[in-house]
Amino acid sequence: MPTVTQDIPQVLRRTDPDGTPAPLVFDSPHTGMAFPDDFDPVIPMEMCERVSDWFIEDLFGEAPAHGAVFLEALFRRAYLDPNRDPADLDVTMIEGGWPDPVEATEKTARGASLIWRVIDGETPIYGRKLTVGEVRSRIETYWRPYHAELKAALDEVHALHDRVFHVNCHSMPEWGDARWGDQGTRRSDFIVGTRDGTTASDAFTEVVVESLRASGYSVTVNDRFKGVELIRRYADPANRRESLQIEVNRGIYMDEAAITRSERYGATKAAITRMIQALRDYAVG
Ligand SMILES: [Zn+2]
Image 1 (cartoon, rainbow, N blue to C red):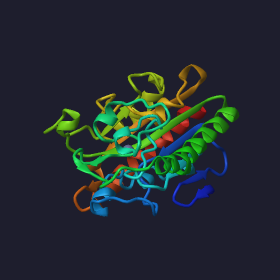
Image 2 (image 1 turned 90 degrees about the horizontal axis):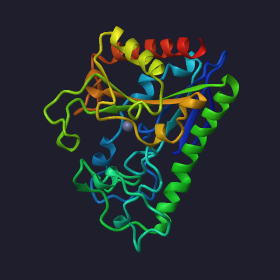
Image 3 (image 1 turned 120 degrees about the vertical axis):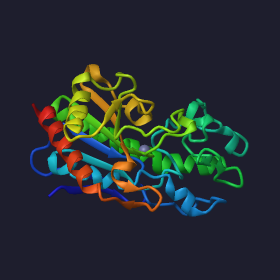
């Protein structure tokens, strides 16, 4: 049985494989359920809870049984998004500005930087500005330990195998929307992101794509969802450190309105588990 080796309440949980490890690390940054006590939204909590990659930690949950380290964030994405650089801050949200360098991105413009400003692209989360101390505390208490644990896992696995393959796991709404420029379009069943081929080799990417297609799912690559900070920060393909992002279409496993598993859940989880097996065979081979 895989073992929980690190469990920081409300922050992260790391599970390590028993038996023969494979050079694989999976992480699920957007499935945390905890809202720390200092989260102070002016909108209903349910609205803030909706922006989650529901059930992803379970859909990929067989990874440790196949030799992979599995890391989960336990805090909610609307509180702090670990898939951002800490310099990606919206200074207009902070009382008196921010003393450190900031680097705004298109996520800042969409209100979805390190600390989200809005839900659904338009509804403000806070009725006041956050203090510098509050923002620092979120970075130090949540962002930093999550990234430190992910980096430690990647380094440990790389030291053991001289290579590491990292899969960053997410889900996306079934249908496109105006913010992404794909409104009215049903998204692929899976979208694999490698930041246009800069974070992972074609060979690693193809194992994922071919395995999911063999199970009958549609898969596209770098199709709008190309991956953000968690794959950008640690990938170094020339030194055999490869990272890719997988977005699972919620339409193939859940009812998005009811937030329940759909009748397709079991088949999708089985397909993801076969993909994990294929990755293991590739990674150890
Ligand atoms: Zn996500």
